[in-house]
Length: 342
Image (cartoon, rainbow, N blue to C red):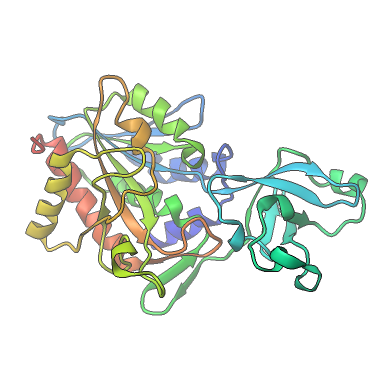
């Protein structure tokens, strides 16, 4: 699973450009499941279990990542851009990016410190004041390499460091994809459906279509979520902690989660000695916002991996959390599909 995560994080797939990740996932799970794709690019996999499910369960993880999109090219060959998904401009300046299918290299630039005046020197620049430098001098030269509408991602390498930590771009949500692939590779006690969704970062569009097609009775959304266990953050604002296992949400900006599924997750974790923690905030959101209101409604839980520096070039997780999250997902999916989530 670690090697697969490394390979998935290396693929460039901002929202709307998930094909490379989808192809990699299809290659990995083809021998183990019945596959189909839809018009948006979602990959839906049916995994035959030892027995038919008593409750139709769907597990989903999104394939896309945050990124940038070129909006125009200036006369002197610089690229103006907008964000694809939620990115803090403070993590952008000076970062290397790769643009378009060809991976054209560039650097995000801004006005140099020595030229800043007044309040400019005291505040972070907005995206409107940033640009991408691709090393050309004219619009004509730039247009031979890129076009408005081309997307870009941060150029950031996968690295293992410290005591079991991993740094990479796009861990949100390639780690969820990697865990679902691992589940598909393994025998399951009940039939399960897995959805690898597109465009979560721009409004959970893919999950809306996938859930309508699958028509599950219950769903588990598998995500990465904000860990704020860092200096200068007070205890009650830390949300969740890296190294303390999977994170189960009770509510966020898009969903009030099914209370029985929430309690079941913690009950199973206690029974099986799995480290587990609540997400102690109602911030953010994920594919559950689309999933739980599909058709007549879907009972939904969110199980996430704690991740520092989300939506940045250097997301940080601890591998032991991935192992514990996979254990909880296996136990929870078996219980729910087996009809034990009353």
